[in-house]
Length: 267
Image 1 (tube, rainbow, N blue to C red):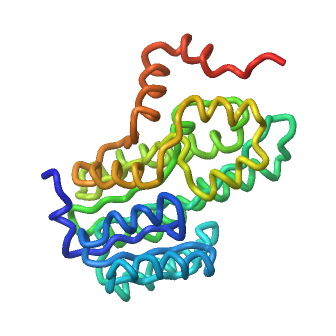
Image 2: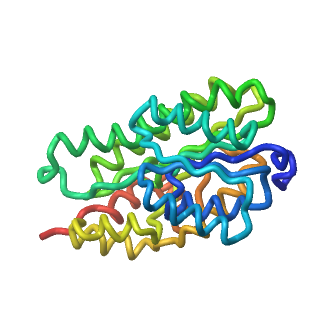
């Protein structure tokens, strides 16, 4: 099946949905699922996101403010969405924010924060969602990592480490639940043109930003569309656009070449 027809009677719950890819995904799923739950730690941004969806005519919508780094808040928000919308067939975690910088300039607090936000945030979402999804047969559970969860890049040691952990978690759980109807996938996009990307660019070393822009930046809507197209089959890795596919393939089949291409410039 190449459509989302099997999920039209169930809802989608999206964490990190107040802006960027999460909000684009909420818009992309409108009319394709029974309802949409959007969750974000920023109540103000969430209100704007809710208004944009309601302006589109969405009626079965639940917006809840919660921080995925809190297991209790994550569980409460998930339960509130299910209570308002009914059973969920699709759960996606898009919550995250990069903290770039060269290794020697980053404090250990940054590493701990990135692990807490990305790995433990995903663990909390999955802990809330899996007991609900697993008994239902065909369901989808997705975490957003990054192409930097598949290889490393200078200036992103803390972020890439946390996203490698997310990839490892998703692939392990995909194996663990392979004989159920729940498919666990990990979305690995390249740089995305979002408010978060603009914010991180303010502290990003110039060489890092230059390398990123050379590799290409996708629109959030393109990433969301790629995810929607992938959901029916539920593949292990979802790589949106050539901006993600090409570096993945080069690294896989010509790792020496890839290492030279992405090495930090001299100087």
